[in-house]
Image 1 (cartoon, one colour):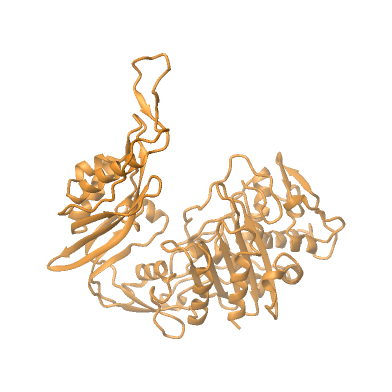
Image 2: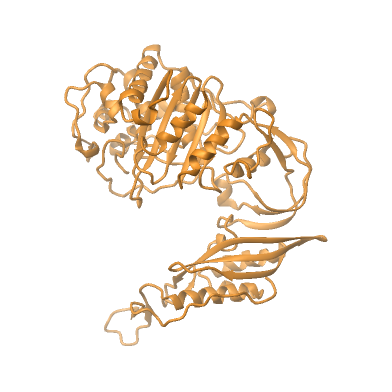
Length: 560
């Protein structure tokens, strides 16, 4: 349950020199209806020799962008063959014949799907969306199946001819490569998940609940006393299981009898969280109760993958909360003492700088934390051991040990031991550090109470689980200074605008993390107010104070 999730970004081979909150990067019947696209080949769909220009017998390889005709012809060949039940022919129209043939064969044989009708939508470049209408039949029970998916046409390496790029998601959007579709008696009974007040949690009312409900069913279906029904399911393959994706029900042919599982979710906060993330295309947020570790809300605007619990993303400057606790403990920083914040600092042959190359002359560590000065942290790297940050994250904050037992699959953070520039980058939440909103909400909760309490969605008394613990706590002086840093940032620093109007005992930290291929960084925000702690991320959103900050602040207000 605490295994590493898929990583949502790649590290650059050479670091970008960035600053502030961005920092360093390290088979059926019938014929479908097709919308055919006319026109000849595009002018830039040309050919070139496959070998040297002097070889007159060299095979010509088509290059250049695919024309509309090439895309539609390749798509039509694949879809027509699939619809007519010509699995071998359909598979041959893809770039992975063996994988395509296996899945398309299982589509009929194992999933018992027949009467397939495929209808193309409007092409966008090389991507062709299409709708699927079919019938699922099992032991006398029949139900219709409808869904939308898409395919992408690419050029074949050998000769440049167009063919369908094969991924299992072509067959159904919920499939990862290596997954299969099976219809039969479900091995796991369904569950009826309840919020903390006894109300039922449904995906219809709470769109983010899909992956959570799947996880609850997988863990508690049999324990809760339910009875399995007959379903069309996605059965996860080896790679999906490594990523801890749960089997997923796509269609229920006959109802099972669900068992009941009570969660810690607050219906009011869950509804508020759903509303907040819906306004952003790739936003995730988690709200905790620091005094107990209870998870009060979890929401993602993107469906299918629970980034809030299972995401593996560089947390940017929110990591400076953990780093600050380390520096204060080691006597390398103190909230109200002067601390260097130069424009640049070079370590491990990498030159680091602050956002807009700012510097703070004669400023305190509190000022550097509030403004999110990268070099204030990087400059302390020579005084640290390679494993210093790793130990601090594990021993004080309970992270990066893969032992959380939340009740559903989670990724528990990663703070690997690194050296040179990568170690320095980790101090500001880049390098090899990976987190998600659950992890960073827990960090704020630990600061609020002074003791790590493992977050949980289902009470450990339900199944006698043992929750993870941290081996030590911060000293009273370190904790007081860390709270002072976060309170000052909420009032006067990069978090001030978002936290305006959030009253009481509050603290916050913003963060941004550059991701290769994105025009804007991922924006992060973690904060606490009274007995609430929350963290959120908006991918490709920009600076955390402007993107994730308003989401987190709104939920802290909603929690009273």
